[in-house]
Image (cartoon, rainbow, N blue to C red; front, top):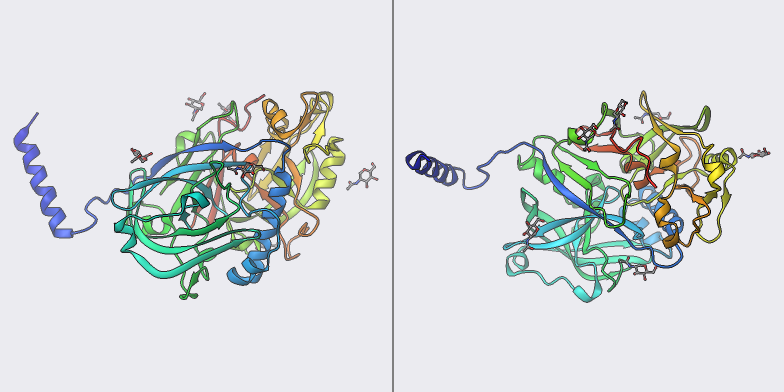
Length: 425
Ligand SMILES: *[C@@H]1O[C@H](CO)[C@@H](O)[C@H](O)[C@H]1NC(C)=O
Ligand SMILES: *[C@@H]1O[C@H](CO)[C@@H](O)[C@H](O)[C@H]1NC(C)=O
Ligand SMILES: *[C@@H]1O[C@H](CO)[C@@H](O)[C@H](O)[C@H]1NC(C)=O
Ligand SMILES: *[C@@H]1O[C@H](CO)[C@@H](O)[C@H](O)[C@H]1NC(C)=O
Ligand SMILES: *[C@@H]1O[C@H](CO)[C@@H](O)[C@H](O)[C@H]1NC(C)=O
Ligand SMILES: *[C@@H]1O[C@H](CO)[C@@H](O)[C@H](O)[C@H]1NC(C)=O
């Protein structure tokens, strides 16, 4: 339209480029990435088993510090539950190569090359940025050993320079050749990365959120997470927002609470929470975590038993989940999660495993299976101070409430969404 004007701005831009020789665009608006939901529900389900093993690994790791605990585990399943997971596309290097990475708030290292038959072969640009460190993460019987690089990482519009990440030499337990994720985008607290490098054992690896903020690519040191319940297999309606919250995904107000000071939940995106079934408190104010890598909602054994009692559910041997009859289901009460001063209502519909997926977990259409599980006999910590975690608000919770991890202010945020009261079959 105005060629002269455009030429002038191009010149100005070039001057700015020369002058700053680096970040020229200080865009501080949030950057949003679409998430894809994946299922691997072939055969009988092991969802609860995977979730419990992850819970155990999370507790062990936090309790004994990064390295020792990673070595201490003896679990028969990987830390990352692969029954259901959310992934996003991440570009690495120059020119960027795309990877589909699992979104994990329960870990903070980012790495690629998950599959043994796709050993990570770095581009020349990346190869030159080998840091000299090995990175190793042992997830029970799952493991990752790789070389640590720093290179440019692309998250949709974000171009993060000098991002540390691992490139696999050897991995085990991440789906092998059957098309699992290419690796993990760890967006939890940065402290979880400390002690994962060798020989620089005391080093930590700033997360993508940390670096994007430090490089002034985003205006807030936080990430917003929008998951959505399954309406049909193959949904891709999740979203990750770096540097802010996507208000269009929220219906109501965001409640922020400080990350809990109670260990071991304090090592993660941990919060204090009270859980009631109807009017009955089943879990008194306790510390636990929110976690994108856990499928179900896990409660300490005492609370879980009470939930089972109050719902009249029976343990289904086939699926490992609680089940109720349609008649019992119609009489279910809401679960109320009190976080800070706010009550978040998980309606009965949200307590049910998606009916259309009953068969893939080995269930029958005669029953309704529930997404509340026992956190496990070993770590069912109970009340605050027990040295354990009392709950994990996994994907089944996060699909009904927007979630923010504000690493800068050490806060967790939650808000109702259009899905909070949605009725899904
Ligand atoms: C990588 O992914 C981005 C964002 O999803 C897309 O725009 C781009 O075309 C992809 N690049 C390649 C080489 O596939
Ligand atoms: C899917 O599940 C099967 C059986 O449990 C397992 O062998 C395979 O590795 C899993 N695939 C992925 C991508 O997780
Ligand atoms: C939420 O619902 C409102 C009102 O029905 C609608 O205007 C809005 O677009 C919906 N938002 C999303 C993200 O679906
Ligand atoms: C969480 O609960 C514990 C135990 O009651 C308490 O010490 C702590 O102050 C609470 N709040 C936070 C943010 O940890
Ligand atoms: C479950 O109900 C039975 C019978 O009503 C009762 O004896 C038992 O204590 C209850 N257990 C829990 C954990 O609430
Ligand atoms: C948004 O929240 C209001 C107030 O809680 C509620 O009445 C309305 O149904 C909600 N909209 C959607 C689409 O869930």
